[in-house]
Amino acid sequence: MNAAPIYLVLISRDRRLPAAAENLAACARAIAALAPAPIRALVAGKNPAAAAGETARHLGMPVLALEIVGLTDPGDGATGISLADFLNSEIPAWILMEDTTLGRRLAAELAVRLSAACITGVEAVEQDDHGVVLTRAVWGGKFRAAVRTAAETITVTVADGAFAGRFEKAGGQAKVQHRRSEAARGGRRHLKRIQAPEADTGLSEARAIVAAGSGIGEPDRLVLVRKLAERIAGAQVAGSRPVCDRGWLPYSRQVGITGATVAPALYIACGISGAAQHIAGMSGAGLVVAINKDPRAAIFQHADIGVVEDLGTFLPLLVEACGQEEDSTP
Ligand SMILES: Cc1cc2nc3c(=O)[nH]c(=O)nc-3n(C[C@H](O)[C@H](O)[C@H](O)COP(=O)(O)OP(=O)(O)OC[C@H]3O[C@@H](n4cnc5c(N)ncnc54)[C@H](O)[C@@H]3O)c2cc1C
Image (cartoon, rainbow, N blue to C red; front, top):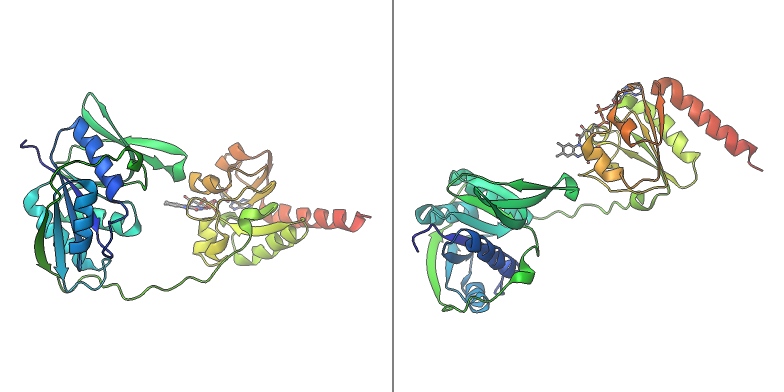
């Protein structure tokens, strides 16, 4: 078979079988069933021999162990440089990697170094009249996108577990070949991991949320947002991304695709335009009240009650009205 190979690229962190091995092997088989190509496995790392042996035995195929001499951490820039040096001479059609932070970073780096295309988070492999089509989740999993590329080489990260259930041992010779590569100096060095402080804001369990968007205009207006939240039982304050980017609220209070996913009974959006990335985090809310001075704001399409008004005018009135309700409660 002269077709360009499919490479599973596994990163060894210890002596064990790399966790993504079965998933990548099954994905490679699925691609090869549509576009026949030989499948090869590569296990790279500081000391990959034992993990490569495990991989060869488990997958039932020959494995190349790429020892990166002098590598201190798999996350260092040297990993991508050594992989690119090796793969450059192989000209694979597909390079499959784990869909982790490291895998995505390496897939992107290899795509640049090898002039390849890069598709991350692949969940399914199909075929249409023009060839292989890869499917991946987009918009925080709310939609699927079908993607094809005409590139000669494609780096792919395979969504965790997407193919693992279809794994079958290959039944080939479990031989391991060894290669060495000097860890390239320079580039990125991984120094240490710093634990982020625990930030349990309780947003995901909040019964009500008053969320501030860019429309609040200035951080001082947050006082009104907080006052409103104080007057609603079980309410928490949250914000859109720009509000957190500006440091008006901590990131732990950001709602959206890159923030918290919330599902309160009541969500009051103050000066939020309704961008899809924000909606992705609050679409499970019960009653949505939107306050925005622009009647065409997209947030109104997601709101049960829409108030077209300037926040400067409306928020003080709403805070006062909620206060009066509270005062009159027996
Ligand atoms: C990869 C990626 C991830 C992202 N993740 C998130 C995420 O997790 N969460 C998130 O929120 N965003 C996220 N974003 C950003 C998102 O695309 C929007 O830019 C953001 O949600 C807009 O925030 P906003 O609605 O506060 O601001 P804007 O879009 O600027 O909207 C402000 C709104 O306030 C209204 N307004 C202005 N002044 C007043 C006033 N005085 N009274 C009443 N209304 C007023 C305006 O009419 C406007 O509708 C992400 C973007 C990308 C590319």
